[in-house]
Length: 204
Image (cartoon, one colour):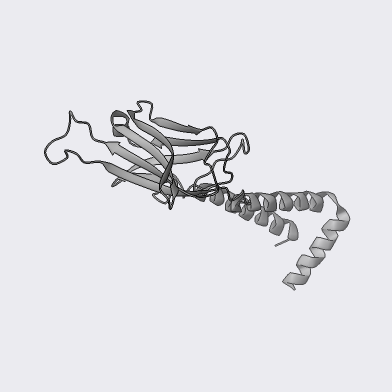
């Protein structure tokens, strides 16, 4: 196996790692239940959540860690079950552990299946928060067993901790670095000779 083949094989491995990281950034491939940006409203019935700070990070989305407090923040919820479009759902964000409400969207039916909570100034301070989602029973459809029942789900997130470098970005930087070295290897005879010598030493 020559050194060029080894380098090509290494580039394919890096591409595979980058693709895998992209899948697992939101918990895995489609159809899995490992997505950490989901609310389980009822057993096997989910609602997906994504956070954005479009002014500060226009090309980024977030989940459990939102970089800045006091920054325009959008919390977007997508119903993954058609039945919720005909149910009244209430959304609330509270500061923890105090339980202080910082945003509330009264119960309403969202026929499009997507709900956007717009917090013009984001959350007021760095710290931990909870998103509460409450299904409000439809009085016209309740029977004796379900009367008065409210289903509540919640998910925690932290805000104001800054934006770290994600594993995806680190892999992307590594891929770019490897690609640059590979181009240099193919185009520069002296560099190619040195790399071949190093690989030969490792193999020998």
